[in-house]
Amino acid sequence: MDIGTKQNKNTFPESPYVLKAEEINQIVAELQYIITLAEIVLDSTDTTQVYQALQVLFASVAYPDQTGNGFKVLQTDGASPFWGSLNPAGECSTAGATEAKTVAITNFVLSNYCRVTVKFTNANTGATPTLNVEGTGAKTIKVLNTTSTKIYIPAGAIVDFIYDGTDWTVDNKIIESYYNSDTWYKRYIDGFIEQGSVTAISGNDGDGIKSVTVNLPVAMSTSNYSVSVTADSAYCYGSYGTRNTGTVVVSSTNRAGNVAPAGNVIWSIKGY
Image (cartoon, rainbow, N blue to C red; front, side):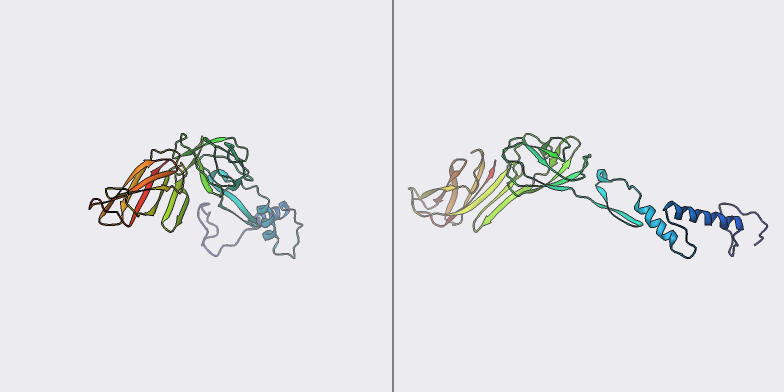
């Protein structure tokens, strides 16, 4: 290489390359600046001072809080700060009948499409509850973008909310379920209920029909719900009669006429 030839500043010099005195001085000055900026006294016998200085300087940097993007600085370990996923969570102990629900979540910042997870100590009995997270204001709770539905949240339930810019939204998922032998039910956040059981049939009310009034595992808010009844005997068929919020009449009819039906009826209902 011709040392006397001027090098293009955008290209690397060919190896080997001997640093000029002024270049060496510049590098030394920059390293000294880094060390003194970290308030470390220069020591010609310590070859780790640049490393020490970088640790101090990185640790002192005010890294931006990325809460709005769902991230936050979780750790600053010397020169290795990093961001991690942040899932704000807290417990709401507001009384069930109080519609204005509140929850405290340290360092929470409200932003569009942020998510919070809330555990409810008490079951909600309010018709139109709101949620106020860390003093950011009471926001209406919506199920599937609808605010007119009743919000069913049992005691101890853990619910995920997403802020849509105006209200807290929640998916209409199953929030409570039960199964015991032949009896079962499922309850959704918007109050919709599915439930059913198996009821034994014995006797004859006349004309080969036997009716039984059964208690519902979960009371309905209205009697305007759908009912499905099936007899487990090939000689019988199922039907239903009077519907109430807490009971329903199920029947089994023998196809042979005035013969007592036997077996069970399997019934289920759906509604609010």
